[in-house]
Length: 265
Image (spheres, rainbow, N blue to C red):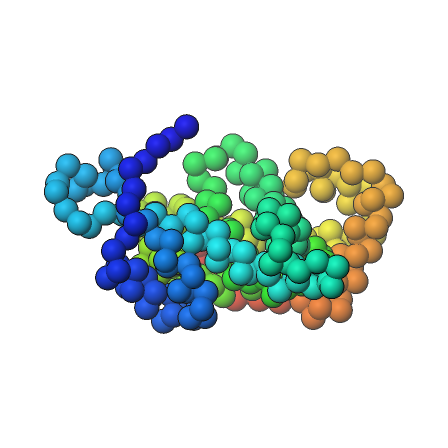
């Protein structure tokens, strides 16, 4: 068990966080609910750890969880229907495609960087970009295509590149300028993610489909389940507008060509 000394943030710091969230697009009601939970914590890695100061690091895991719940809420309310008000259920009982999609994305990342775990995109970046990209889709396939298509748009060109949504001054990609390999790996992963899902979506060979799933996700599925998933991916890729036919007739995700390819080589 880790125990960290912490005290509630003062009003001035909470107001600063509140203003930052509103200025970056958060709803005021959500921002007020989130920032009231802000805590100041000690951090023995900070250069001023042994100096008497009021400038403690902000700890906002609980606030981040509330923000993430807000991204799930629209789908959770639709999925629960009139049988139960979502507000009456604890968040851990909400089962929305967003959580499942993030699990899939992280599994793909883990397999891709199996031999380079220190170089893989961090979970905070993937979770934040996926949550921003999610728009309440009610099935995993539609949510996956929407998330994969939109994630790049939420990476900013200037710092903070991937802001913490509940503390916009904090950059989850703060190590990118220090180790350019990390940014390069992120774009390589996102590009490979798009290619792999569209390869699956256009495949009519179930044996190839199951082998690709096992290789890319480390998961073994039977042919019946593979056939069902294949049909769902095909339908979503075509009807969602994310699929496009290229000159050579293959299907790809629109927007791949807009990624910063300077990081690919």
